[in-house]
Image (cartoon, rainbow, N blue to C red; front, side, top):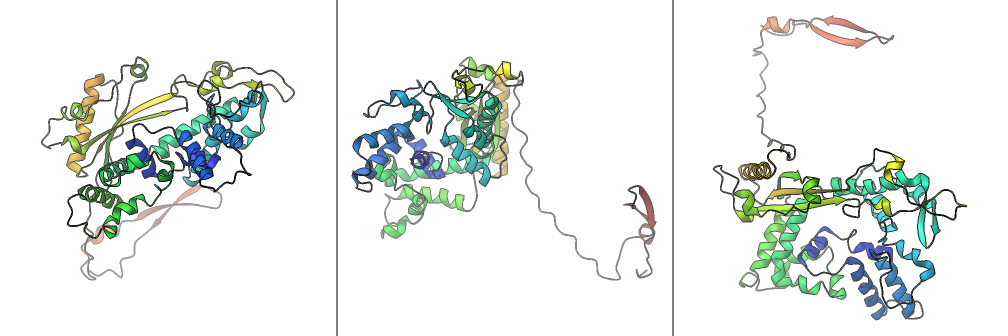
Length: 424
């Protein structure tokens, strides 16, 4: 049940997630998971004696989890008023502490070699149900904070890494280009079609001509050819180039004054010799938070003193430590270039930085400078024996070497370079 639910987002391949971005009206991944379960039962993969209608609807409830108003989502099953805490286990709409998060943080941090400091085993042990709610021992406040901090860290260092986002943007372009022929945006709403959109999607596009003998002669397949060119770039790792990024001031976000600029707004700030085409620039907005947008999820967590306690209570962060943050969300705007030439990348960066300066009067600083392009250094030709051009006087200078004796103290040793074997 859990793997099915999380497979719709956390375990999806990159291009499947990209396809979700193409579909404007796509339902939530939890709802799609419930429909996939219904399809599995309808197709006879799960027999009626193993899971009756009430049980199936109950499982769908557990997949969808608790809604933001802390009520289990309605699926037609009788309510479990005395066990509402069960709906917080998989998808917790109350405070976002659920096994889904435990699963992907532990797995992804391990395989990506990113160290996170939350102790998930301890967090699961020190829990108790009070008033139909999963509560935690008071000592776990910091551990829960580290859970959400680990989530933000994984998003910053892995899920929204600059290279990862460049690949995602290329996949989006490839899928959008091929959609007029493959009709993915229509098929994705059908659970039976949705499960077919796995890692073979890119291969289907790349090998499209094998299934269509008259591929080269038809003009209807131009979208596929355009998609294949993007995938070829991806295979060769000729990625879209990251240019720059800026953190949007929190005051602008809180005042609801932030609006993503158009590409034209940015490139008009450039006055250099390079011609920047609007279709070659991508502005990508990125938001990282503690799973509840601008809110502190710990404000919705209840605690208890010990396992004999029957009362639950809230803990304010300032009563725990004054070092906890007041802001729990960051917004970034990134600029990418589809044209990978260094001149074009520099031009887009210059335009973006000028736009930032124009917007906030140099009060906001963009990202660190781009890495300089690699320059090829020619190796010096080897000097044949007997043609050494280094002056003998230079070679005769003593070299001072530092060594450490057995007592750990340093002493200087001079060693003369012997030149008897070096020809005049």
